[in-house]
Image (tube, rainbow, N blue to C red; front, side, top):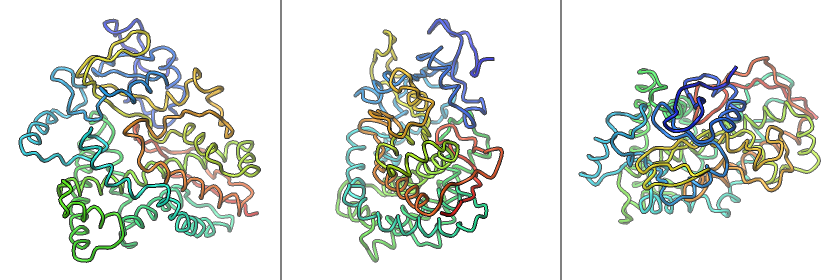
Length: 424
């Protein structure tokens, strides 16, 4: 039986396999489905009216192209995917007329992307990340040592989520009393990154309500930082705004929301996915115990887990990829990062977790100008968690027969991961 949907798309290619995100297996077990698409339909136009690419070389070509825009508002009339919000073009026209573009820089191009990213990047320099190691280590050590009694705990909520939230809240100087409230709100936003046609009316309302919640919350925090600025990142953004660095109030809010959600959601999925993979692979776990948690090992876990499964680009001009296929100007392209990270043309034995894999050109953090800003911090957090676990335990066991995943297809992750640590 085919893992993916079938449709007659002979106008675009000579196959009948296409990417259908409605299939619930994309969140549960996407690997075999990625492999089938990459083999049978590596470049195709979906019946949903957008391009889909799945090979590593094609994905890299699009991600590094100067005519591949992260701004989906550049999609031309008549070329919109069927899932796009009908109000999208109206919103763009309103923003152009008002001069106010409040979307996060993740979805914007130069020069706005360059300006906004440059303001935030100062907080993620290697020096600043290294300065965070002590805080990350103490936080992770405390969380792990609470579970050395052999009992079962939820590693998603009590470690993989708690640590990244504590770290990004430390950088933003957000009160500890507010940390817990971010879990539900950020989860709603993460679900809202999936295509609209996959979301129920209730999920769309929840997503919009979460955005409103964060708008009000950060507005209040920014006012507090104006009255009493500190050395945190929010204070730095307020200073940039008040100093005339062309940072609007809307950009302040959207940047803060992006940092909070992106700062922990993907790292949470990477940590929990790594714990699951290592629990299932004793050989890989022994490599870590013998050789340490190296940068090479973390990159392989990132490739293997692929917490960000896909991303989108709009073509500002025609671009030819693959075997002479042209992605036409004004069309939208879905880049399946999870499939590219399993491409046997690039990775030997790609379904195996090989913590010594070199080279490893994984695309888990994206590529080019939109390469993940927080990549150094995410690597540090994964390294610290695994290092601390290995120091105090001989193994960890999965205490359930069925792993439950959230329905998300963009930011894929587990709902829970019941683990039991075996103390050393």
